[in-house]
Image (tube, helix red, strand yellow):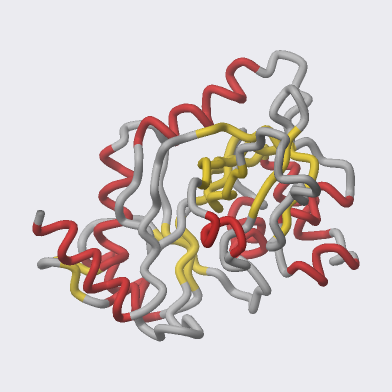
Length: 238
């Protein structure tokens, strides 16, 4: 599922911008299809323009009828009446999809015989101190079995004496959900921790859901600004 809004706050209409001969949303859709990992790929949108673009190049869409606070809510509406087991959320503004990382997310569910995992997501090691302190990079800490313990915009854990060896991890917002976990998210109200940090993954933790984190070396290139779009064009050229 690729949630796709037209009115992005920082870069309205970005999904319909040209990225070396094709729109951003088309690049993302085709990249998801080309992984050959999914039974179906859909763009979930509330926009006539995006729907026309996707159906125009032969893609599949699900129309989102309601206003939503986040992409997970939009996906919950889309899958409510679909016969699916696992739903993967791929952001519409990330056309450089890493197949290996998505395959690792799906493997979590194939290996989860007791079905204790509600959702899985990705993390990548941070090396630079400015990346660790940047509040735009959501950090995640896990237990010994790689289940998420907490997410924060603050560097966690706090380096009290700067001597203990510690690798900091950035949360990459690509999720694979069991369908019921996605529906539960949509039906449960936001609690104080999520409201404070403005990180939707925290809602799952606050309600006791189990999030399995998968380490990857993948470096995402999300297109949030016109400058990001230009970087993406240059990367595709190279």
